[in-house]
Length: 197
Length: 333
Image (cartoon, rainbow over all chains, first blue to last red; front, side):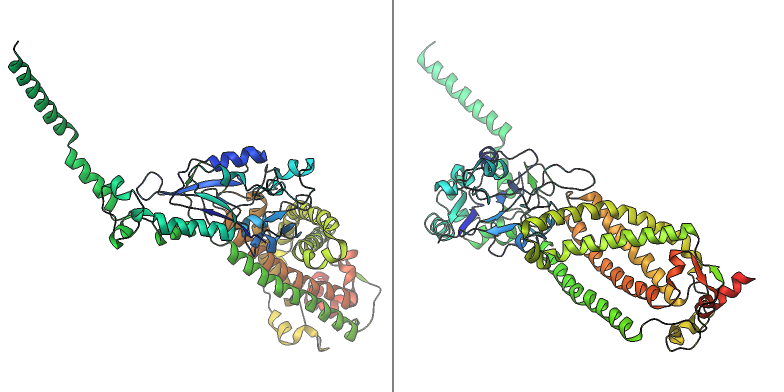
């Protein structure tokens, strides 16, 4: 059985934000909800690196452990999903999540929050696959169609990889081995007028 | 114009142009700047170049990612620029520990208090009831007391449902029914919380003047609060009650303060750590308050003649002489 994983190659990500746009479009994500976001370190400086962040579908997910109503579950593919019918919007998952993945719509009176929304690995929710209810609550279910998440599929520089952990790891390792990276990469010397060693 | 002149003009203009270009662009200086930029001290790219392999920022990049600082992003929302929530796991583990302690302390205290009541029963008045009644609490004081008490019990129960419901109520009720209960509990907790805080402050204001240390209070403590049958003098409130007041004062203010912070901040950029801390403070102080409450209720129930002080506002004269002799002497004069 596959173990689904995301990987963002910081050497390749150009901060084009297509993954964010593709995700919003595919899943009809409402305003103010960031299922995926691109964060840039050293923006505008040499050494700038961007990484696309979303729910990383942890093996031992803190959100699952901390949820007071136990609304999370993990699929056989290792995708962490949640049941919006159970969610009470307490925000504990946001406080526990390392990646800031859980998002909450409209902040109502005081600090009250709506039902949590997060990246589903384009795998919908507990409702029947491709049902209207599932689409309304969680967006598309590409995994059920045999497709991978739209963000990774759309990535023009193939920085964002999604899929079986072993496959993703192999692709990334291959890149490092054959292409090299940074100053060791092919073309670096030409581009920056420096000899690669 | 002959061909020689044409070539001469062409050469002169080309030389002039290239000279001008070199002067304006100052190409070597520009390259020097670029080089400086790429090898300056604070740039993460420098180290790998020196190392000889790869321009991967490596450890420095991932240290920055892990730091919990906010970086630039196109996304709009709370804490979107933060890669890693640096204290989330610490918060969760600490919360689990406190929950574990809760799970031992609260049932233990409840069982202890019940056992003491079952073994020792009611503490009878020395001379039985007299016919005379003395006013102990005014009506407004009773309203404040019961307002605090009822709102606190609602808060305690709803809080415990949210804290432990997953482990004890989901197996009983199932997930759907419990989710409804939990949502109701959370809303009740949010609504009753501010009401409790108003009563709490009213109670602090109303009762504070009788709760400072008064002469002879230490004797009450030294003789064990009359637990061993010996009579002890006490003012309107004995030292035990005073300690309970100050617990309510400090712990109550901790609970309300942390509660308000959580209620009104929700999720706000940069506030995640604050709320995590406040959540710990809230749970820990609420536990202390619940433990104190058990003792307080026990005293009201186990001491014969105590309960009427808070139900009718009046106590038997013999009760006043037994438990609060100095206060009784005071109001008689």
